[in-house]
Every structure is written in C-alpha cells, then in structure tokens.
Image (cartoon, rainbow, N blue to C red):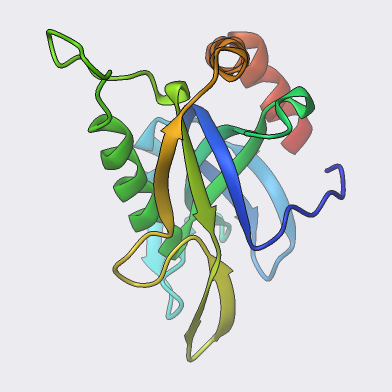
Length: 181
C-alpha cells in the first residue's frame, strides 16, 4: 500500500493472527469477498483443479489465507501491516505459529506462554520453484525462514500491545473487509 520496500529480510513483531477464506474470480479476475474464518464456504467447493485451486460451485476460487498483523521492529510508528500467507505458504504459517506458541516468558515460575508481540523475529525470503514458475516466500518446502532474535523493548511491547488490540477489534475486521471489497 505504501510502496515501501523493506528488503529480502526484515525484523518483525507479530501482533495478531487471523485466518480468512478469500474468494477470487478466475484467471486473476479480482477480489470477490472475504468469508472470514468459518470454513463453511468450503462446502461449496465443487472441484480441485490441476493447480490445486479450490473451485466453488459459482466458478470462483476460494483461497485459505493465514494473516499475521505485524510491526516492522525498527519502524513501529508505521503501524501494523499484513503478512498474508497462502498456498504453499500455509505450512510456514503453521510452523511460525508453533514457534510463537513455544515462546515462554523468561524466568516465569509457571512457564507461561509469552504474548506473540513480546518477541522480535527475523524473516527472509527464499526463492522457490516448480513447473508453474518461480516465486519468493518465507521458506522452502520444509523449512520456514523465520528465526527468533530477541525480546522486544518496552517501547516495542507497548506498540505491540496496542496493535494487538487493534487487530482483535471488530472495527479492524470491518475496515479490513471494506478495503478488500
């Protein structure tokens, strides 16, 4: 949206996670609508095409999207941005969520899970390739290109908490849908 390029690797603070089923017109015909996280739309899938796209009974494509609201660690004033992982990126999303779930608050007597916005992570792009072409994503077939690099500063934690609350709000959901509609 801003046109900013961040390079092949960035340091991020994940602040919120959401799953969305997004409907697209065929042949890159454009966005139709976001169906939210309820997989009920998958009941309308009539076939899986040769490119592994789920085709709805109306001919449109439904895509499972895993979306992370993130802050760029050294640009927290830019506010949250969306890192959306789809298709072959889903496995990296799952592995990233596992890493986030395993993050524990240091010196915690109860071994408490740290909030996702407590840590800084390095992510980088890796070129992938198959018969359909080449693309970049955060990882290759088996390994996500994600690494924990340290805990957030107090300023980053405060920005992360604020962005997390923003990501959870109903207002955000409505704004996100209206931007994509």
